[in-house]
Length: 307
Image (cartoon, rainbow, N blue to C red; front, side, top):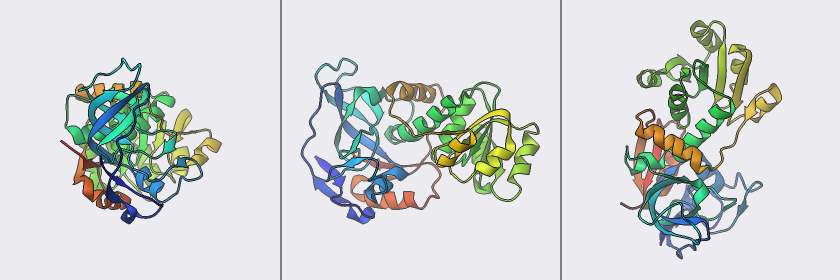
């Protein structure tokens, strides 16, 4: 099968197009023929070796944890899915080896959900990791109807989905973003506020008694969070472990097919959309990673593997 892979840690330049053996499909797994894979910062961070102390790595490595595709075959005792079904998955495993920048990937059924009927393959591929990251943290913080939620980095890859998920839960959402993204956030139903000096005052002007929930998708926001959180409020971050020492929740996303199906259903209900910034062919995956490294992309970057 065709795949982009690397034999050693390094920059995106270590990626090369290769012919790799077809993967085996274990009991309880489905083999997915990949239509689209989404790019996430963790892809190039793994490639650079930043997580070497946390996850066992077996070279060659195919990057990518987000996938949308079609079930090609199923392993033994796998009644949940049938060949031909359109699915999505956050395909992270307990080790780093086979990823989604390839024509096929085996994935445990516990990580798989059915693809939303609404939207295309690239939008479906952009949903799992970012969507689950936002959904799981907002859920752990007990976000519910009538909460006032402040989202740091509301226009980012995770934040734009988190904003919509919080709105779908019935919350009022205030989102920090650069001014060039304010109109976009307003179109989603978010009340935007600009970064920088005076941020606390701008949030307080919108929520004088403080906010109920603060979700940090960028890092470095703890002082602002503490200044605007009401007494008894809840806060968490995916980017700043120090929140745990300040009474908050530090979260790391987990593969979960049931949670992912909730998000897919929100897409089909018209309550969640995945903006796509750019789509690259498989052989240009290194360029896609370099674009992601800039940190200035609104929406997801997708890799068209096959159609």
